[in-house]
Length: 360
Ligand code: SF4
Ligand code: SF4
Image (cartoon, rainbow, N blue to C red; front, side, top):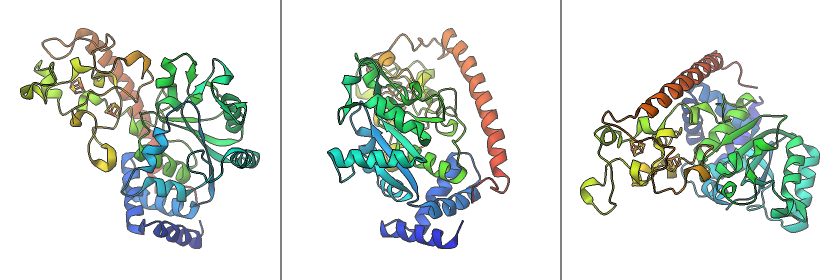
């Protein structure tokens, strides 16, 4: 790690209005969110600053709404878009790149030829018929598989890129990156849209350690997902336990009650949303009065729709607040979380050893 590189990286961030202090704060917060000591955050900041603008990224968009890019670009404090765009050398991104058509396609070809990049997928890959998604006349699935072969790591940003998301409920047999990438790590960052703090944290982690954070059985970073069951951290949980459920949106007396019968999928959703709120910490779905639609789960969207009605997949509560089915599922779930937490703890203990593993 060369001091000039660090200074140059920090100067580059400063030009984008991100001070050394706020970058350090961000890296420390990322380290803490990942369960690491905040001192590791300092080292992450140095390594990430030194790597600024050097690691190439190819960002491909399949079947989606561009909401994940929009989510990243609309964040503010500190601006993850600015950081991501500065941290990485973005070689191809259909929404933000200046070039279009054949010029853009040539940029993609050149980046793939050079290889060694982080490949980000936004949107799903239609597998039913290549004609469902064509780029410059070529099937998107073919292009993505070609790009994945030359990538260092694949990051699936958002629900569609992870498991097919909303397009998977349609006729295109839409699937996530892991359905076609079998020879390398795919880091799934599901939610609809992608959450900027998770994308940024994962990229900072990858740049620092040159490997994926510990992942759960669904390929999601454990620190952002499997550690937290929405239902267990919910501010409305007391009402659930007392059997107080909102049934009428227009009844002001029950406005803060449990949203189970308004379609809340919190009992099966693993997410950090109750702890790390959206929109730069402004709020998140349940606190804002909306049921959790389970957008971080592989079952989203087809198995969890309609969103504003209770689904059979969510068991009925009983007088103790938990049905027998839920309790049984809970035991299995807790065991799984316990195992995952143990694995994560061992992993983190390794990382804590003076941060030796932080690649220089
Ligand atoms: S069902 Fe939803 S609203 Fe009710 S306590 Fe669980 S997470 Fe909260
Ligand atoms: S609260 Fe639920 S629906 Fe809302 S973003 Fe989080 S996981 Fe998705």
